[in-house]
Length: 123
Length: 106
Image 1 (cartoon, rainbow over the protein chains, first blue to last red):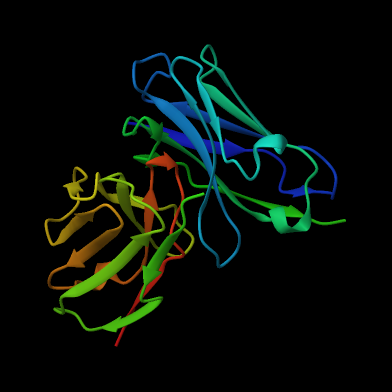
Image 2 (image 1 turned 45 degrees about the horizontal axis):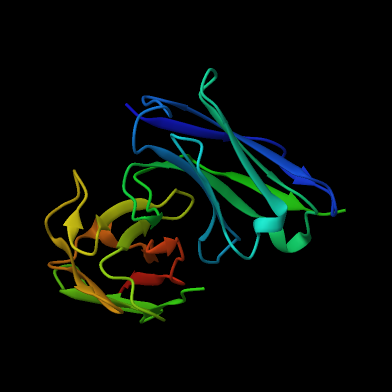
């Protein structure tokens, strides 16, 4: 059974750096074709694809947020970590991590999702 | 960036209705298109990938079609559990989502 769970702060101040962890089970991020990504959803709004890391440590970032995002993996602890710098109130959203083995050359959709974690940016 | 436009934004329907949602891409994405269902307070659930492939465990009343820039999600015989928001997502390049279509009870 594949599960993913996001963890991190629920409240961050403007200009701070957000660090979120995704702890997963039921699959290995060393297996060929597997990837884990991050997606966010502001309250009442659409989903936004943020970043992705593949089994071979290849990484992809949303072009509009690339300068602020870093994604890393730790296969020994089954975690994927996303950092986002210079947080702003417009970054208030539910942040999801998700797993996939379904991808094109340059993109992915997502099979399994975590429950999401709401991050509020406010002073 | 590839933009995804869904229509309609809201759809009112009754149990048993046939429902169709359209998603248009700003440039060709071949068949790299997925559909998700999302209920309030829940994570999205993958329904369809590669435009028309049904995800395991998803009822066969859901189907997808299209290629290039125009895609559709069809729900034949809408069930009470199907009232939700539906998102399309292109994954030809990264992964842009549409703005969502809310299927509500008529």
